[in-house]
Each structure stands twice: as structure tokens, then as C-alpha cells.
Image (cartoon, helix red, strand yellow):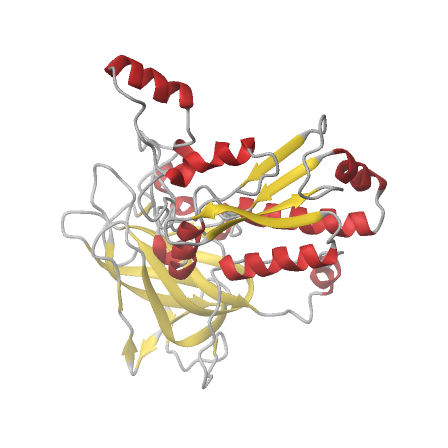
Length: 385
């Protein structure tokens, strides 16, 4: 079991360098939440049990229904004292700029850390504590278990390891936390093997996250590149008035050809689940480029199939989550529409509507047009409504 190593003063630059910069650099999350940081890179002083190990100390991680020994909702220390810590090994020199913390995700218990220190190291043995003037800086933690709290370091710290050392916790609870680390990995000029084998893309597709404006612009660019096989239209508007744009891919855009199969791809029913949106945007880029390159398989697909792609069914939710950021917004921010509808669980089941009306001896109940418009779109001959 790891033990707490001795701390050193912040002016000891032989082990850890402090990055002094006039302009604060905004660094992205290292990837505890996204699992880019593996379980093997997370360590802790003690753990209450396996299901509350360091590997569960990831931002926004959710406990299992039974909060059992395998799937619990945080890292929890085995003891409540000032010698506890959770540590991240970035595996390379990194400019650390901030820490985001949450309490334990639990239906039954209230556990969170109310204050903590931050330490950095290059070897996981000799540690430098982040200072505030001449003394160790105490960062304010959480006041409840779900709302993420961001603390930026007073100056960026360059090191390989970062450690969070809880100083106080909820009176009726235990030392438990989930977290994310903000940092910018630094290039290692001596690591030839890493540079030689680093994963890079071999094409010029637009690999990034697109907000509503950028999504619309990208669809326009694809349409301008392939005007003979693409058409942009919308099926209506969201609750907040954003048009629900779709791209049609066909050798005769705007025409329904008898006997030709049609496919409709929809993403983004949960606005904060963004992978589907990006995959569909990459799909339309890929089909356009490969068609221009006369890829035989893609040419056959375009000429023999009519494809409709709607990348964002819930743009209101996406924009809300985009503004808040997944790290500080929690799992539910932007999931539903602006008026609180979970589209993913509300695709219209017309049989149910009719059966309910028959049972109650009344006319079919009204449903929000936000999602009832989708089957009308499917039935439209040219899909232009």
C-alpha cells in the first residue's frame, strides 16, 4: 500500500517546475471521465473496498443500482484522516491547470470532500504542494455530492503526477470523491518511439465537435462540394426555434424514386450525447469525398439508395450542454429538450395513442409536435416539410 511521501517547498524546482505565464492557458480534461486515463493510472492511499477504489474516482461516474462491491459511485478512502489521497499518473510531463471534484454518487449516503490540497511530482515519491503565498493552498471543495466544482491552480504546474489530499469532509460522511484533472500534455523530444507511432489521421475530414452554427456550416460545405448528390432541408424547428437540418444524399436529390430504398439516420435525441452527431457529420463528408473520388462502392450506394441524415434532433439540449461543458454540467445537462421532453423515450407509438383513447372513450390525446413531426417527415414524398 502506498504511503504519503514527504512534501517539499514550492520553490524546489529540481523535481517540479512551475510554469509562470502572464496569460493563463486553458487546458482540457486529461480524460478521467472519458476513460482516456486508464484504471492503471489511478492510485489511492487507501480504499474502503474494491467498488470504491481509485478507478471509481472519475467525474460523473454513476453507482450501480445496488452500489455493490464492483460498481460504486466514487473513490472512498479506507480511513477518515488527513493522510488520504488519490493520485493520477499522466505518464508524461503535463502542465496541470485545474481540478474538478464531485462527491459520491449514491442514493443512500452523503459523502463529499469540502476542502483539499493539491500536490505534484515527477517520480511519485517527492511531492510539491501548491502554495498560496508562503503556505499550502487549501482549495474549497464540494457542498453536496453531485454539482461539480472547478478550482484552477494559481499558476500552472508542470509535472507527471498530481495528487489530491482531502483536508475536510462532510461531517456525517466519509472521504469520497470523483474528479477530473485539467492539463496540457507536453511533447517529449526524447521519446522517439512515441512520436514515430503516434496515431494520426490519414485524411482531411473535420474531426472536431461542432456546435449548431458549425454543424450548419459544415453541412453547407458538403453541399457545395457535392451539389449534384446532396440537398439540405429542414423538418421543422426546435422548441427554441433552431431549425432541424437534414442532408439528403441521392443521385436525384429531392426526388422520390419508386422502388429505391430510403434510409433515415437520426442522432442527438439526447442533446448532450454528442458522438452520434459527429459520426453522422463524418458520414456525409466521407460519402461526398469518396463519391468525388469515384469509389465504386460509394457510387453504387448513392445511385441505388436515398439517404437522409439528421445529425441533431435536439439542438437545444446540445447548445445547453455545450455552454456548460460536460465536466461542470453533470450527466443530465442538455439531455432533454428545453421543455423537458426525453425524445429518446417519446418517439410516437400511434397504436398506444389510439388504444388509450379507445379505453378512455375519448379522442386521441394530443402529443407535442416536437417529435410527432418525425413520422410526418417519413411519409412526405420529398421529405421537405
